[in-house]
Each structure stands twice: as C-alpha cells, then as structure tokens.
Image (cartoon, rainbow, N blue to C red; front, top):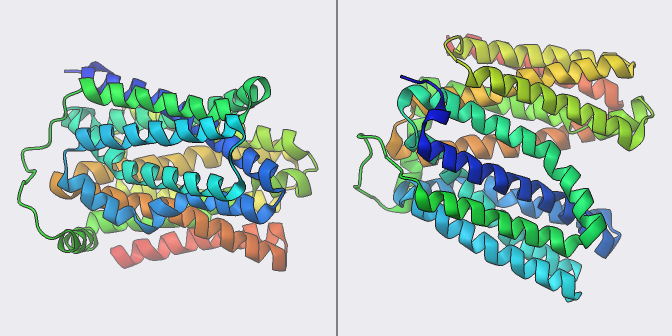
Length: 394
C-alpha cells in the first residue's frame, strides 16, 4: 500500500492543474505590482493594489470557509476558477487595448483577490478528499513543494513575458492558467469522509459552530496558535528582506533575489522531506520549529555578513516551512470533514493576516529603533511567546 499521494490518480490531476495555475498566479502578481507602479507612479496606489489581493482572504476567510463546507467542493472550485478565467481575460484585454486606469485596475484586482480568497479554503479542504488517509501527509507536503517551486519559476517567467509581450499578455496567461484547474476538477472524483453531514444550519450559525469547534479542540487550537506565532514573527520578519538586502548588505535587487531564493530553497527541502514521511511530525516538533525560527531571526538581526545571512535565511525557510506545512498536515488529519472548510479558512486567515500584521509591526519598529534591533526583538518574542504558549497548553 503506497503512502505517496502520487499513487492517487485524482491527486495527480489536481496537482498538475494546481501547479500550472500557481505559475500563472505568480506571473500575475509580479505583473500587477509593476503595472500599478507604471500607471500611478505612486507608492500608495501600489500598496492599495497589493492590499486588494490579500484583504478578502483575511476579512472574509471564515465566510468563504462556510461556503466550502456547505457546497460540493469540486463544483465550487470549477465555478470560482471559471469566473477567474473571465476576470483575468477581461483585465488582459482592457490592458492590451489601453482602456484602463489605476482605479479600474484596483477594482479588477479586488475582484480577483475575492475569487482567490474564496477558493483558498476550497483548495485546502478538497485535498483530503482526493487521497486515502495514509496519503494525506504526502499530499499536503507535495502541494507545498509545488507552491514554493512556482514562487521562483513564476516571477522569472513574468519578467520574460512582460519584456516580450507586455503586461496585458501576462494577465491573459494567468487567465488561461485557471483553465488547468477547471479541467482537473472536471475529471477528478472527490470523496468526502464518511463523517460528512448534509444537515445545514443558518450560515452565521455554521460560522459560529466552526469557530467554537476550533477553539474547543485543544489540538487544533494549539496548531492555530503556532501558525499565528510563526506568521506574525517569522514570516513578518522575512518581509524585511528587501531592506536587509539594500541597507545592511548593500546588494540591492541582486542580493534580494539571492536571499529570497535561499528561503524558497529551504522551503522546498522541507516540503520534500515531509512528502517522504511524517512519522516524526508531532505537535512538539512544530513547536520546537517555531522556537528555532525565533532564534534564527535573532541571529539574522545580529549578523552583517551576506554569506552568513544566506545560510540563516535558508534555515529559516526549512524551519518555517516545517512549522507552516507541518501544522497544516496535523490540522487536516485531526479536523472533522464537515467543518474542514471553516477550520481551513481560519488557518488561512491567521497565516495571511499574521504575515501582514507582522510585516507592518516589524516595519514600524524598524523605523523607530532601527532594522536590526527590531529583528532581534522580533526573534526573541517569537521564541519566548512559543515557550509561554507551550507551558499554558500543558
């Protein structure tokens, strides 16, 4: 009996469609930021457009989670991705024809951010329905590897597409990439667990039930806390890499590319390790990973040699991925299927919102006390808060 998710026909189709779509997503994100700057020459508008990509997932995530539990996840995925195809092709066509301004760009970006936010809990909760229970760890880890690989390949492709064909073509490529997910969802068979229920309540009641379930389940509550700590302090600190690259190491965009690649390389290594077996993965391992990540962040704030920083951020990529992917694996194996969408949406809201909050907090602290002092304090808080939460949970 194979423990690899790659032995599941349905998961292989899903992974192929998801990988193609993720590459399109990264092409879109790079092109969107560049086009926002090109249209407005305003840092504020660039920030507003960036905000529209993630705000719906943070603000409306739990509501999207209710929908993921109320409706057939496969059909919902097909509908959302089909709407994304239309939205992106409209954006690409308007851009290519020159009939767009920064306000319309922000509006269409908000629409796409809403669609992507609605699909996030569907995407996370449908994977367990595509594999056997003993293959779930492998499936989640392989999905993480796919995401991190696309995070590197996608931006490189974006630069090539923009240079050769323009921003409009990049938007259209993203639109076409969503078709891969529609095709994958059309041919797979989703198999909810035997515990899934068809009895439905008022959406607000279901939302409260999901929150009550997550907070009352000691294991899931602890995993959500660890995900929050890793996102706020860990991922939030890594959002300062552009400042490190230029201000501390004086390397500019080239140094940033190397540091970012090192983080992603570490994340890919962690994902491959998790995909090969997770018998060693426990709550204490995830908790220890967050503590180690905090200590590595302290080290990052204390060093001023570029070569040492590459090694530190690569290790951060490993530890933070073990924390993030590991917490998701443990969560998905413990949650009941009838609330999987809602709990997955809470996890996503915490991860995305925590990173945004962390980067904002670290940036504000750095402007007052200096970058390295802020990073030192962030790492120390990460380790200390994790230790305190562990004692409170015991």
